[in-house]
Image 1 (cartoon, rainbow, N blue to C red):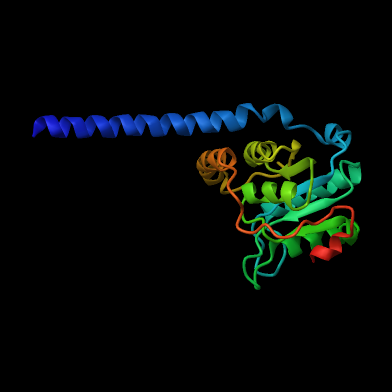
Image 2 (image 1 turned 90 degrees about the horizontal axis):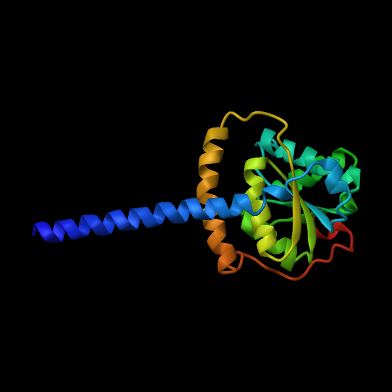
Length: 221
C-alpha cells in the first residue's frame, strides 16, 4: 500500500514539475521572441504596415471606452496620423446585439478625426489569437502594427508572427491601472494558451468571407 501511495505521489510531483516547466517555457518563448519587436511611434511610422490592429477591451454601459481601451485607441490613432498604416482594424467582442466593442472603438476614432472609411471593424475578435488569425486570413494583412499595453504586446505579437505576419507593436502604457497585478497574472496563463493555439493552428470561432483592406472600412460597420 505504501509503495502504491509513494508511486502516486511521485507521479503527481512529476506531473506538477512538467506543468510548471511548460508554463515557464511558453511564457519565455512568447516574451523572448517578441520583445525586440516592441518599438516607438517613430520606428513604427517607417514600417510601412498594411494596418494598425487595435485590440479590444471592455466598454462602459454608456458605450464609451474603458480607460484601458481608450489608451489603446489613442495609441492606434496616433500611429495612424504618424503614417504607420493607411487603415486601422478595430478588433473586439461583439458576441451579443447589446455589446459591441468594435463600434464603440470606431466611433471614438472617427470622433478624433480618423476618416470612417479607413477604420475596419472585426466583430469576431473574441480573443487576441482570434484577432490575429482574422487579421491575416480574413483581412489579408501581411504587415501590422499592434496597439495595446506592453504586458499584452508579447502575446499579441507572438500570435501575429505565428500567423506568418511581420508584426511590431507600440505600447499604449499611458496610465497605471488599478487591476494591473491581476492583468499580469492572467496574462501568464493566456500566453501558454496562445502558444499551443499557434502551435496547432487552431481555427477561430468565426472565419467568414475575406475582407479587402483596399475598400472602405464602412463595409464592416
